Amino acid sequence: MSMNGEQIPDEIYFLCMLHNIGATMPEKSLSVDEISIWTAMDPSEVEVNLQKLVKSKYISVNTAEGTKRYYVTTDGIRKVLSMYS
Image 1 (cartoon, rainbow, N blue to C red):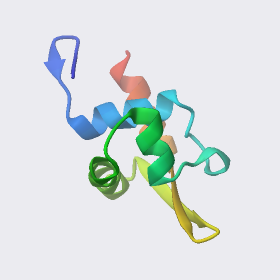
Image 2: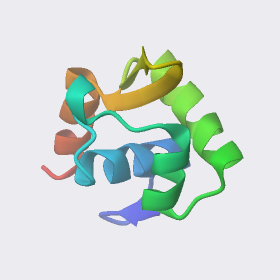
Image 3: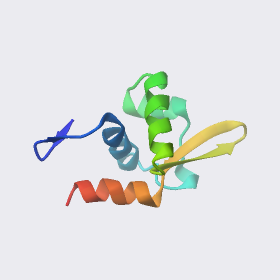
């Protein structure tokens, strides 16, 4: 994806999608399968992007009923919003 004529990394585009679908707090966190459905991406591709974003602290993970669920952190929200300015 390109924004303002610049190419952005796949995981940052993915971060924008998570932000846009509202996974921005623990109560709205999504599983890999749910993210896969929302983004129309293969679950393995979703996991690769999530791992990169968790490492960057743009995504956080919590476990609910034995299922890992992911949401955009405050730093992730700032990253997304900075792309639009």
